[in-house]
Amino acid sequence: MSSRILITGANGQLGRALVKRYPEAKALDRDQLDITNQEQIENYPWQDIDVIINAAAYTNVDGAETSEGRVSAWRINASGTANLVKAAISNDLVLVHVSTDYVFDGSKENHQEDEPLSPIGVYGQSKAAADIAALIHKKTYIIRTSWVIGDGSNFVRTMLGLADRGIHPVVVADQIGRPTFTEEIASAIDHLLQTKATYGIYNLSNGGPSVSWADFAREIFASAGESEISVTDTTTKEYFASKDNIAPRPMNSTFDLSKIESFGFKPQNWQENLKQYIEVEADK
Image (cartoon, rainbow, N blue to C red):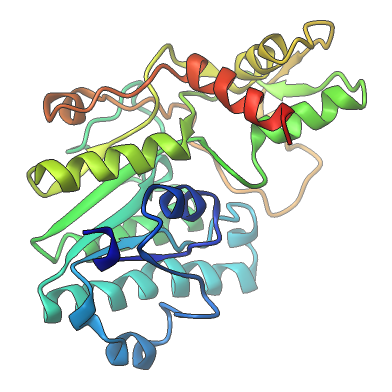
């Protein structure tokens, strides 16, 4: 089946995990298939595809607050997804679309799938629009994720880099959530496809306790044997006080995982996934 899967955004963090999961899939990055180009999407040979996994996205949260970034976020996240939705409908394909905790304002401590959309920044607004477009198609899975960690620039690699230089970071302690490792996202997507689970929205993060970014940093250092590196707590407001074009962040990003668990997928504890991730990083 994997040879009839098309992965967009194949060179991103999630895209790389999906390519690893589906080595025979048609894995395309923007240079090979630009989802914002309606003509390219319409002319693609969809007769060879059964499933589209859309991992393409504009994810520069702060960049989206600039005049240029705002255009790019909406073009890629909203219009690009809408183009894929049209293709999925026209060719009767299954669409898997990856969303984010930023579609919520973070005022609730535990987010459920039926929570009304309430984005507070441009990135979240463009992704919320993508969710709305994706749900037009009846054969759609929306996977909502948070704090994504994979093969690319991410929080874990940043913290490990600071530890290598002996830097003791100041990290925000008032944003709460759970990390989501990309291999876990790929596994969940595969589970939903293989079991032919009911179409719709599924929250997905790793399991385990909710933590602040500051406590997550402490866990990273402990797991990497860098416990001598101390973390100083700060607030989001204080951390970004001297910076321009900063997007508002949801303070609470914890997902209720009961729906995807009820369909037979139990996310791995993020602390275990973190240890595995750091072991792989150490071998590079």
